[in-house]
Amino acid sequence: MSNEFNIKNIAKLASINLSEEEQDSLSNDLSIILEHVNALSDLKLNSQQQEIFIHPLEKELELQDDEVVESLTHDEAISNAPESKDGKFVVPPSME
Amino acid sequence: MSLKPTIGIETHIELNTNTKMFCRCAVVDTDEPNISLCPTCIGLPGALPVPNKKAIEFITLLALSTGCEITSKGMFHRKNYFYPDLPKNYQISQFDLPVGLNGELEIVIDENKDYIQIERVHMEEDTGKSSHSGSGRIESATSTALDFNRSGVPLVEIVTKPVISSSKQAVAYIEELRQLSIDLNISEGRLEKGNLRFDANISVALEDSNELGTKVEIKNMNSLRSLERAIDFEIQRQTKALEDGVEIVQETRHWDENKEVTSTMRSKEGSADYRYFSDPDLPNMFLSDEFIKEVETLMPLLPKAQREELMTTGLSLSQSNILSKSDDWIKKLYVKVFDQTKDSVASYNWITGELQGQMRKANIEVLPEWFNDDYLSEIIELIKSNKISFTSAKIILTEILTAETTPSKVAEQKNLFQENDSEKISEMINQIIKENQDIVDRIKSGEDKLVGFLVGQLMKQSNGSVNPGMAKELLLKELEG
Image (cartoon, rainbow over all chains, first blue to last red; front, top):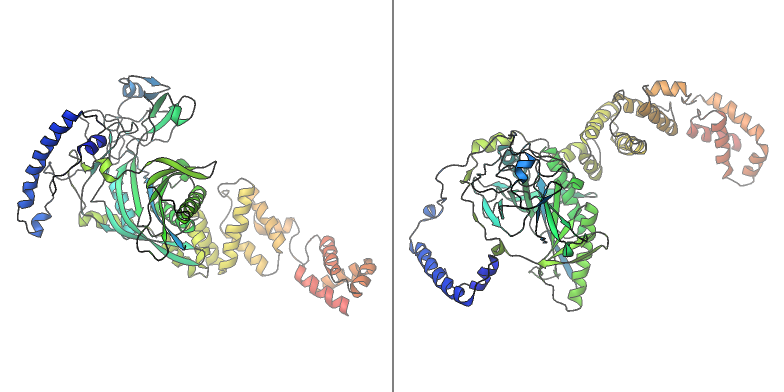
């Protein structure tokens, strides 16, 4: 795994603005993290071990039946909205 | 320069479950905004998603019906993006371990079969709906209003391999997928309601090239007609650009329904833009053999098998295809009428032509209660045994669609039974000849066309009750003699 990355592109993907200083310091931190993670590639694993399925939760996914449960009323759902109009949440203009 | 287009299609199918994908809020079909919400589907902190069992059954059924390999060890990922229609700032989707992989769907164009390879079938959740206020144009909107009723509705995405080569194939593929989802009973399949939505990836390359050209994604096609037109437009645009030596830019383009053009929407994202990572709220999903077997028992007769069955009755591939994509009652009616008459062509023509045509014209959506399935068979038999004419049969059909009666009763009341007695018809012919001697003379001097006029007179005088084929034959004999 290569440790090369483009900190400007990462900032763009995360939609955050980084000063030159922040870019330098974060690049440094990220390099250390990547180096640490790279240690995994030194492990000698057979194909079965490589297939191990890792997830933070060591339990199987539970599924729920398709039965409606009443939840928030319209007023409750919208009560925290900083702005609302005609029953809808209103947010700053966004476009795709 | 000889160029070839290559198309891949991404389709989203909204499942017709009672509840949403990761919470138990009802799936609602209403204009009243924000009435079916809970902490999970509006992304409140601490809310935990739990998948809908029915939705997992439905996607497994779809994946099996398209011959996909089922990923027994799967997982959900977060697809991150900055857009307010999903308030969590990510969509729960699947990335490298989708439910289904490597499937295939048979499509029919006219009398030919074709096969569209499917890359993947994965499970995700729908977004809310945004509307933009201000001058009405999205660019100058002053605010965005959000309705989250649709947020979290189960959505299946089906992605084809880049194997489609024309707009016609693309339309046939969507028609087939739509019918499949209806027959599987996993979706309403109504395009106008957005139950089925599609984007197309289109590229154009040199005919003999092994590499694909630069891919352009087209969005906002809301109907089969716009899918067809958008693809045709885009192929033409890219072909012209390449011929003029202009480079194609990888981007997402928007289909403008009114102007019938595509235009740049945004530069295309790569998967890095979405920063996929496995959703820590959702443990891995294991689909056991037992579960898959259980789902298999729900498999109905698929459109492909329906076509094969229909063809054994004597219908052509395209006729079978049209019937397989018709409403259920039409398919059933065909089977019944064919069983009784053993005449596939007449059964097909009467049902898909005259019956549906008259119903459309009279704005009748469902057959009236008194309309007995046997009536069509009766009409077909009456025509075949020369007891009524085709024209009379149409009149009878109109009557039984609008009033509680039977074909024979209508024929009797309206005097529509044909006169097949040649002696009686000859008598009438002699009368007509007497009354129209001038016309007869003209026919004899070469004006053959006027025979039709005499037949018309005969039909008129007999109130249409004479068998016209027989009448013409006898008339000609009389004129020659």
